Length: 290
Image 1 (tube, rainbow, N blue to C red):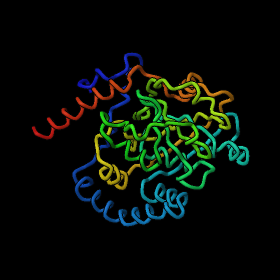
Image 2 (cartoon, rainbow, N blue to C red):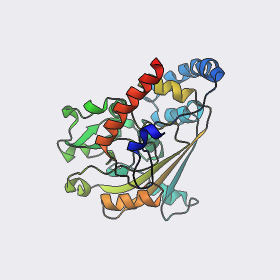
Image 3 (cartoon, one colour):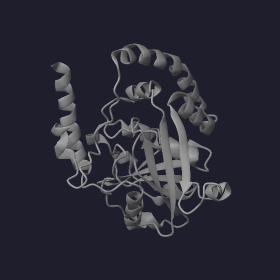
């Protein structure tokens, strides 16, 4: 849209913050969608509770039965898909740091499903911020995705020691925020020591979602609204997870990997995202009040 052209990258013209929209008829929006949510909601609650007992099977069922995620295609660079044992050896595991792009609240669950870890408690999410590295549990990170952009990095979540990461699978989001899966934002500067923690291995993972309807580039809806939207989706979603082992961890090398998989870095960061979201909210409100 022309109104949002300020927040398009000057190179490829990509708008990484624009929320995805799906065309819905009046009948679907006000009749079919509420029925789907009412039917699926009880099972969603049951599967949510089941994540505390059998997290991986519960999340897989929620993806396929409720959220319309038809397939998660896992691949490892340089390894044929028929070599399943070799692919399994490269799955994210304990004492791995996974450098990955951020696109939705589902990211951490997608990575958990394809990983070799068995519990959500074995995962730590680390996010770059202007004030340093922030540490979240899986459920804290989901709430973080819906939080206001101006109050996103609470001091209580600051990573104080790498010892907090020992024995965990670490999911690292170097952009510090999410996009609509059309590009990569500039990485926020991090301590070099984070990329060479003794005893840890490093992998870059590229997440792609087709279509991108479940991405959340800005917190323009609440958690409950996102759940309702996800439960009433008609389109099937396909997710690609590509693992690239890093002999030596490097953010520059990760940028190249993302670019090779269709995600170039745009020159729009956290500041531009905040400006975009301020304008987007006021524009949305003005449309509703007309």
